[in-house]
Length: 477
Image 1 (cartoon, rainbow, N blue to C red):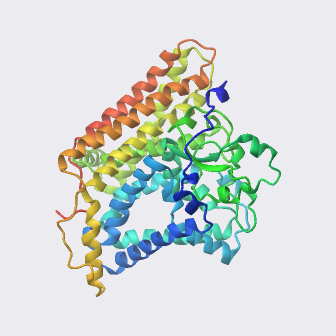
Image 2: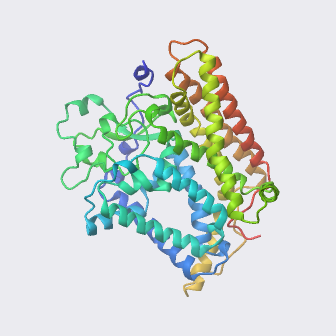
Image 3: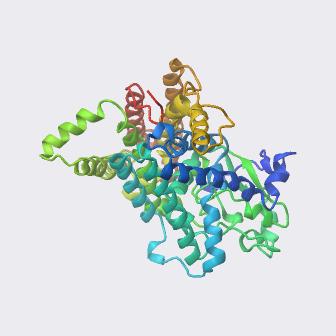
C-alpha cells in the first residue's frame, strides 16, 4: 500500500531535456565548468581572508561565504535542488586526491551512517557561536583550507565519495534540506532499467564514471545523499536518467527501500541528523537576536561561571540534544497512545523527525534570507576594495552604499511567508507520516495532534525570532 501511495506520474518536467540547459548538463565537463568559477572564488576568499583587512564587512572571507554563499545555497535548494553540491569546488580537491593517492580503501563499517556527521554539525554550530568565524576573515580562510585538505585526504584514502557521503557537514545540510526541493535525479521508465544488463549508471561507461555514492538509479528515491553530479545520467546508455520535477517532500511519506539509504524508518542516525538540523535552525537564529544575550548572561550567573564556552555548551547540549529527544520522544509516546497502536515508539519518532525537515528548512530560509536580502550587494564594494588593495582598481573605488536587495519593510513579511510554507509542509508530511505506522488502528487524526502541536510550537518560536532585532552580520553600520 505504501508503494501505491508513493507512485509518481511518469510525465514530469526534465531539465536535462530542455533546449539549452540540457545539452550543457549532459556535457562531460559541465560540472567542472561550474566548479572552476567557484574554485576561483574560494582562492580569492582564502587570499583575502589571510592577507586582506581583518574587518569582516570589508573582506571577501567575511562576506562571500556567510552572506551571499549561504543565501544562494538555500535559495537554490528551494528552487532547483542540490545545485550547491553540483558546483562544489571541494570536489576538485577530492578528484586530485583520487588521482594522486588512489582512494582504494573501504570506509570503516562502524563509521558508516550519519552519526559522525551529525556530531560534526553539532560541534560546528557550537564553534560558530563561540569563535565567530563570520567576524574573523582569517579563521574563515583556515576553515576553507581545512575543508580542501579534508576532501583531498579522505577521498584520496578511501573509495567512492566517502567525504561527501559520511563526513561533509555542508553536503549533509544540503542532503537533508533537499528533501523539500522540487527537483530530483531519477529515472523516467523503470522497465528500461529492469532489462538493462550493464547497470552503467552505477559502474560507469567508456571513461565516464558512474555514481560513486552508490545510489543505484533503479532503486533511488529522493535526494538524500545525491550531489546532483549527474554522472549517472551521462553514463546511462538509454538516456533514462533525468533531472525531474516532483512534489517537494514526497519521499518523507514514501516507505520504499532506497538505494544507499534503505528505509527511512530503519535509520535512527538519519532521524538524529534531521533533528540536529531542525533544532539547529532555531537555535542558530536565537544566537543572533537581542534577547539571546541577557538569556546567556542569566544562565552564566545560574551556573556560576564566566566561561562563554561552558554557557554555549549547556545551551547547545540542551537545545540540540536533550530538547529534541524529549520533545520527539514525548510526542511519539502520546501519538502512539492516541492511535492505540503497538508500533515501537522509536519507529514513530523516526517517521516524524524527518517530517519536521520542511519546517527546519523554512527557518533556515527565513534566517538566511534576512542576511542575504540585507547584504547581497555588499559583495560589490568588497570586490572593489580587494582589487584596489592588489593594485587592480579597474572596478573603481569602493562604493559602500551598496547593501540591501529589497526595502527594509519587506524583510519580515518575506521571512514569515517562508517560515509559514515550511510549517504547512511539515503539517502535511506529519499527517501523511501517520499513515505509515498506524494502518489498522483507530484515531489517525488524534495520532497526528501531538505532531501538529510540536510543529506549531516551533513555528511560533520561529515567528518570535523573526520579529526580534537581529545582528546584520557582514554589513557595515
